[in-house]
Length: 172
Image (cartoon, rainbow, N blue to C red):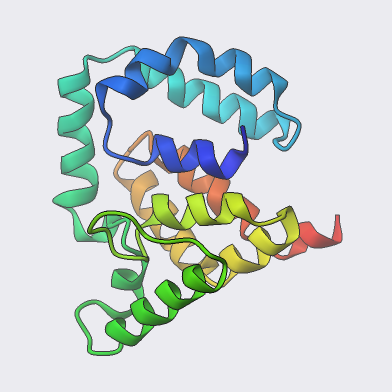
């Protein structure tokens, strides 16, 4: 299980399938070699948060956090362009990048949806993923800060994404 795939799943709208698999996630995290101790601890804490609430409460929180608050949108180009006409070409470019790698966007989700971006990053090797995500590092920082200010448990997940999107990690 790669970190980006896990983050993608955890940032999706919570469904019963996720809740059903929560008990096995800590064990799988313990086996992961591509995450550090701080990331592992943050992920375990977030998983505990999910396990502590009923599904309907998690769904309400998700909608309130991401769908009702523009500053928390998981559509990254929204943070860069808002509803500006330049958002369209950015979405097209991102969609074309996915196609170049043979990845086809399923459903009606826009290509800038963070869980989709993270799923794509999971296809890349670690350095490619870091470089790809680094293009949106400023957006990740703003989103992390906004979620922290709101006291959202999702801030921990965005903090992991932000940390992994820092090119200085390449030097390590």
